[in-house]
Image (cartoon, rainbow, N blue to C red; front, side, top):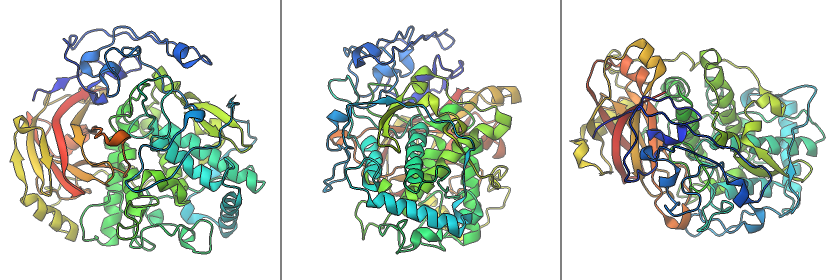
Length: 587
């Protein structure tokens, strides 16, 4: 399969047309690789949906998988060639989620209000400081417990109640909302795309303000589960107190304290020693935040514009460790068949631990922008900035918020406690230079990899079952200069991943080492994972996996090679179909 060399930077004017967007490719003649692309869009705010969507998008490069080719939009759709921000849902048309697990019958719709207020965050005299959960004082633990207890005691039809706050995640993440103005109806889904970070930031913001209002403390700040630091790599003890409002009985029994969290869960059936697990976690963090997240689309996830039923590729942190922690924390299948509560989208918000988990996920957004001296920037595409959501605030008012208004947490009145970042410079070494020290987990991984097979790119699509699969993939350019590496990231793209979305599917990806030596080795490129949920009408919506590998290739000594060996190692709930694998350059 020929690789696609992307010579244009992924900017606000052409980010929707990049090969990383993962959309289907229409059968039209693509523009020249060096074609000039202009893309102009304006928004008409506060207008009916049909008017608000009159955006002018010129010279759209559909040949690389733009909006018009995306799933859910027909070629004769009135907006087929128009890129738009995702608009807030119409609460009056909220319906039973299409994404509930088989056998589950629940509703996620909030109370309906016909009055919507454009929200302006209040100015605060002092920034709230979200503290690390593992170091929370006894006084603040009691305050947090009291706030959640009062939220649980609110009537279930109060939009600020714990039930309704949990329903927010269920509704936005399980297809209870249709996108406004589209017929046939297209559901709204905030995962696997650039909406993941801003949606959850706004969600936690109002959750936090409601808790503060209930206890009469406007300075109240959510603690963050500091799972990226060795001192915080366990469930905070006060979440496991059965007499506390912070307790949830539907959590994994096997992963209660003092178990160390596995940020790349699951790996193998044999749990490694704590010291090794901590080291692997730090390596996963370095991969997800530093070496594998150099450009915005790798960190935030794929574009997601109005008219498409979902994004096509999760960002580095959403994929790992976010998804891994959800599945690790959720109940075992023999107790709860769908992994409830944290282990399934529809029920995740029912566990108070969810909010501290996502508080740390939100913290990663702040930290990512600070790496490399602040050179990393938020996405500037207007369709990202103008995407909007509806929430109920601490006064039970229905408010409309935009992505562009939450880019800086300080503008929302909060920051995070500063703690050490042991993963920041935790660059992994090649397993070959480390002599492939055989840990228990590595031994199992190597044994499984040895039973794998080699395939050719012409054999794709393939089915990934219980054995690893390796394939040689050509690179667009070898022996790149340091300047070229700084200007363009080499990205490994695993396309058209098909699987049962109701399962916690997982596979790892390695480069130039078919022994799969473990995530604390430089050959580890990343993982694909899924928090169980059902997709619209049972459709098998296919996703892509995008992994930045420039640093990896340097570390394993492959920069001068024409091609690399990519090994896919199944870890959970196979089979998975893989449509193709390629390497692109993106900036």
